[in-house]
Amino acid sequence: MADQAHEASVLSFQTPDAVELRHLRGFIVVAEELNFGRAASRLYISQPALSRQIRMLERLLGCDLLRRSTHRVELTLAGEALLDRARQLLDDLDEAISVTRSVGGEHAGRIARLWEGSQIAAADADIQELRSGYEALQSPFEAPPEVDIRPVNAGGVACLWLTPRPKQPSPTVLFLHGGGYVAGSAYGYRPLAGRLAAAASSGILLPEYRLAPEHPFPAAVEDALSTFQWLLDSGTRPEEVTVAGDSSGAGLALSLLISLRERGLPMPGRAALMCPWVDLTGSHEPTPGPQEDPSQPVMPSVQLRRFTDAYLGGYAADDDPLLNPLTTDLTGLPPMLIQAGTGDPRTTDARRLAEHARGYGVDAQLELYPVAAHVFQLYWSFLPEAADAIDQLASFIAPHENSTARKA
Image (tube, rainbow, N blue to C red; front, side):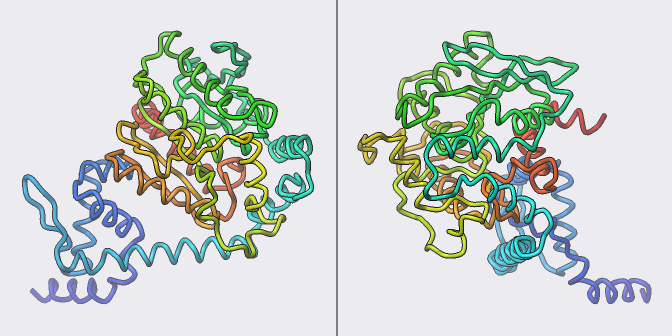
């Protein structure tokens, strides 16, 4: 009895140090889902492991946070009291890490130098300078050597086909690159797409879709439709396909999904959206401040407006569902994994998209990383958060393949 009393006393004394971030993150996801199975899927861990985490947290706190029964999971009063505070605690931690790294971090400094050197945020840069700058931003990186890359014509659209050795799988990921609809290329995106192909053990089709202003909306959407249909005509089942994209490429991915639904065509199995830029109206732009500095690795609002005007080419976008995913009915869209950096002003788009999609019954998962750069996944070769994010995308795209690889 004395030993048990001593153990309880020590446990109580050590509680603040013993509670780990994984305990709180697991609790928050369970509280949001009110279902251990769905929560475990979101966290990419087994249901028994998640149950053990929650039981340990309850033991450390000395109270029940959840009521469990055969048919439902409910928050207790103690659980409700913890939920908002835990969310705020993790948000504050992410912000603190992001600020610290943006001020003095070696990785943040390297990203800032790459960004500033590319001149893509310069207000006086013309379209050709922007395109050259975007290629220069990605030129220091290389695709993984274990990934083979070859050209292919997919439904009339020039593409690159990336396949990891030794398997050489057929492409099951349609990756739509970013660049504000006016820049970016399949060639420039070989490193990021190649890293994702290797992590997911999946083939990736990387289209060279038409760019504005030479080819305004809906040219890019038409090219995305053609390449998706080519995948299906090549024998890939629609439910096996993941549509992926970063920044404006994520917006193009949503336009593709909505277009497929509107036409009554088969829908891909999932969507992976990196740092999505989907608000072409600019209605929720951040207040101008430090993030409007061209040396910071985020795109200034004035530049985004240039990209939007070039892409729309005078087209009135207000009532077109393909261009307004934040106000459009998203019923029937596939599960989504949405990633963003907490220090990126575009994170507002990611949060709004996740909330809006869930309102229409879409399984939308939002992952936030303590990074201040837009499309931070580009820097996977030296930024740990970027490498982690790509591994999470790989698990989402091919969970069976990824879990097998980890066991091996």
